[in-house]
Image 1 (spheres, rainbow, N blue to C red):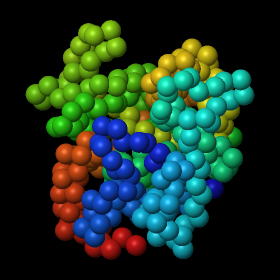
Image 2: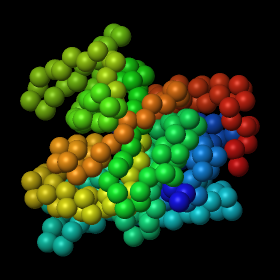
Image 3: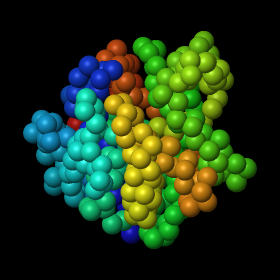
Image 4: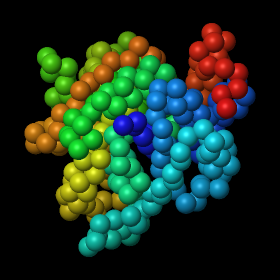
Length: 300
């Protein structure tokens, strides 16, 4: 069974200051998503599902989605603030949707095969897509055997401000043991530091393996997601900025013995756009890969 690629592209981009999902960074004006889709098609994915918002639908389809229509099957789903289980309401004053966990849930009715999840504003590389596609092509679609592509923390930090990362602990068999979502990590020389909610600072070496929301799941995940989303809303649903993160959800499943997550290593370098100042660095790296022949001058 060929896998599906689920692309999370509904983020508002508050730190970036614009709609970074469609910002051109390639040699011929391509967005980061274009490179992910190109790599995914070559890796063997046969369906794309984009999670977007209704208010960006026109621009997103015009700049991104329409160019793939004759190359791969495409579905669109919409993450909105009001997409909540029965019995829950949006607290007054909340503006943003409920995070990446809710974003995946929006696709439950259009995905029936093992699937990968990626961020639309992160560049993961061809090897990352290939190893995840190979894993998903051989997994039991009804099982709870998942995967994650891991990266070194120091290779994922921005020179322009803090980032959010899921910091991972891996057991001796190569499976994820624990993942802790840290929402404010900054560079500290060759190392890093995280600012915690209680005001304390957690020193990090930079050698930690982190999640960048490149996961492989089966459709069995959706039942877990729905249950854990309800639990999240019961505990934090009245907060104005709380988010239901993928790493936190995965950590709950691992702790409960409900799923296993194989950590896959990629030889690719990751880079992404968190702040507007990151765009130049990303564009320079993509230009370099194009000049080396990794990507053609015209992707599509």
